[in-house]
Amino acid sequence: MAKQLITAYSDSLLNIDELNTWLKLDSDGNEDDLVLSLVKSAISTIENICNISIFAQTWANYYNDFPLFPVIKIKMYPANVSAVSSITYYDEDNAQQTLATSVYDTDLITQPAYVTLKNDQEYPATYESVNNVVVNFTAGWASWAAIPSILKTAIKMTVTHWHCNRQPVVIGRMVSEIPMTVKYLLQNSGYLIKEF
Image 1: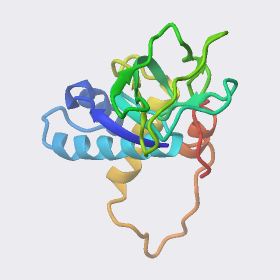
Image 2: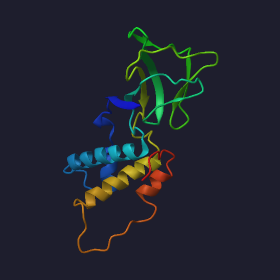
Image 3: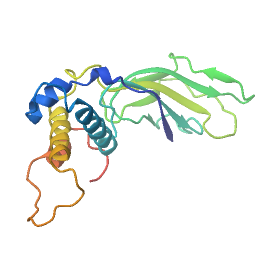
Image 4: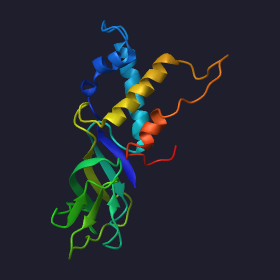
């Protein structure tokens, strides 16, 4: 399975004022570009660790074929899928087709979300090649306000750490991890898919 980002989120969804307040920065906007850069990096890092989309984005997952057995699920990543827009495939004549929604069900509650066959349905035969089956979907939350608080806090704590520590190493100080911070938040968010 391969995944491809089709439409990324807009920077306008980011709440720079809330982040500046969290960082205890003046509201003069002098550091907005830096904060914007840090929050985008923090979001990207957390998305990669948890295999989720923070903001709503459209994605395509590519599979070589439909599952051989009807009980096998087609899992989708990023994991927090909000809607499946279509499933396309190349038939045995190498013509692109769209799988009818009457053929499959989606489970958007389970993490990762998945597609499975409805009762008494079967997947069509596909052309013998790679990336024949494409699941197109939206994953992520529609706004900053909709993001679970635990993930927003992890983003803000990561931004704070990077804002205060701009070098990759600390010289001349004892360094230790503060318990129950970003790692703890992500492990308890319900979205941690990858190992730390």
